[in-house]
Image (tube, rainbow, N blue to C red; front, side):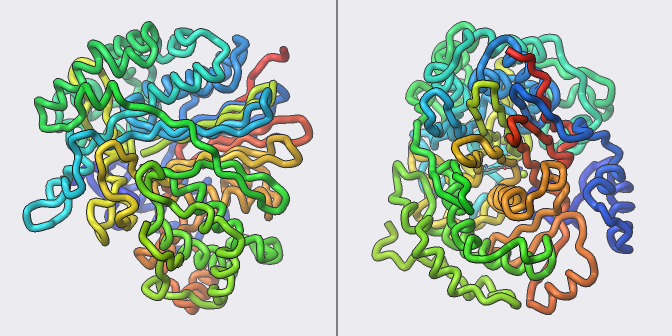
Length: 596
Ligand code: DON
């Protein structure tokens, strides 16, 4: 059953009922005859979407950026009401659960990295999903050891981890919030109850995912009622509104205890899922020390395990600091060569050494050390591609010890929030819990089902990321804050599965090394290599000269559709700027915030 276009799929496989097929074909034709000098925007024009972001947004008083313009306006509203960046982020997260159901969620989980002005300290909270108590290592292998034949780790009731979003947001509210909790849910409840207009882009997504979203009647009733014509319609989510009201009234207990928890546990049991009342009552988010490092005198603050993102961003930046990147032409074959070789080492290590630190001793210090980056630096030989089969997870230690969304808020007091949260695939597991409107995640697929078996993003894993009850699956989500001389420089983060790490890396390099403004950094094409498979992905297109040079170096190049969406806020000369990535056309950064 063809349910979604995953990152691993090639353009040639872009199929199913997609009313943009003809336009895609035109786009491909244009690429093949190499007409674009500015491919990204041409790509968008070809698809016919009007991006919400028209130009860089500027503001003196703070900035909000999210993947949906309605959530951005809710963030601004909360700041204008006197709320801080934490309040705005919580309200945004609840609103996205309504207006961006493909990724925004209360049935999923994520990470939040924060810089708190009052304490001049960075914090991070892990509200990632946890494996249910009844899960077990080989649960997605059949009697013959074959993985996921019935797509059980990605689709349906067995695919979900215990959601963490509501508990995570509640915890942030208790620690840093300034407005009453109920104020933060008002807009989400409004949009769920009164409905909101489906954008042309969202209409196409709902159309494209018809098969996946029609399988379970509860999901179909909400998301496919208007099939095939979603344009100029409103999406109403009455059950979700009632669930949000319970959360508004009872805090996190409105989700993890009482009527909603019982409905989740009951529906799970009835349909072969594992999440129980016990799992819900015992879910806990964790405050974790954020990872910090320095890159060309900028302070990087990012998420540690169970995200692999921060570890590998620091690892790659450490290696790249040995080069004068700005002496290379941006996205020239020489630049791509260097980035690709560095990525291969990082993703190889990811496959073996990264997992939930509560269950596995992740060698963070070693991977992010300068000694280790020197070893990688010395192994890299530029001018050619080292075949991935010759690159191994490189620590030699004694013992083995396609949907997400990012949002950022900066307030006038100097607090900064960078958060990425997800259902994993677009619309998660496809399951809506009966009577609640809660769309569930399929995060169990982020575990390694068995050594050598790739997940939906083609990522490999090992013991570090095997399934154990209460463990969190390894993630690539990389919410990051970069500081300069004690002040915010910029925030960054993206969806895109395995591509998140390489996208965030390039977002940092574009701004720090190539001095791009936010528009330029957003428009710059992104490349990706994840060690295995040994393929160099380039977004949109590549000119013939660069392609030939890369080929001569030994790369297998593939052109991909855009799969990431960088949301960035920058602070420069006492002014905030923001840019929502046109790759998801509803994204919007805006800073219509009153002077206090
Ligand atoms: O945590 C992770 O790495 C994945 N669950 C993220 C999935 C994702 O970004 C899909 N979005 N395009």
